[in-house]
Length: 166
Image (cartoon, rainbow, N blue to C red):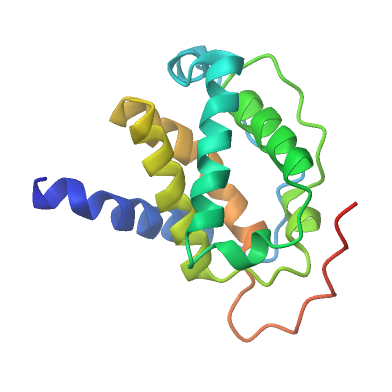
């Protein structure tokens, strides 16, 4: 694999970090959304997004860098909300019914390194589904503003305890 392609996950993570650190206290109440439905279509519409989410969650559970925050979570509910969110932000017809990103991640103390690893796992899942690189870039750009609501800034006060899985 060419060196440039191997560096892309880290480059995306760095891009997401740079795009999202301007205002770490702001909250993104509703996931942003692309107006270009070609992203939704390239992800395979709802059936493809469900498969993408299944692979994405499995990668995060298997990855020692990311598995801890997923421990004890209701995976069925998690996958449902991620699929709704991915469908919505990619320009699909779905409505996201989950919590805000800040509320959903409260108490998990997600670090920048964990967030970057999750982005890498999402890219790997999209690569496995042959999602074109240009579509991946557009999709990740829409997800990027959520960083500020997910990652706990270094040196901030400890978060409230995370809720128990239903």
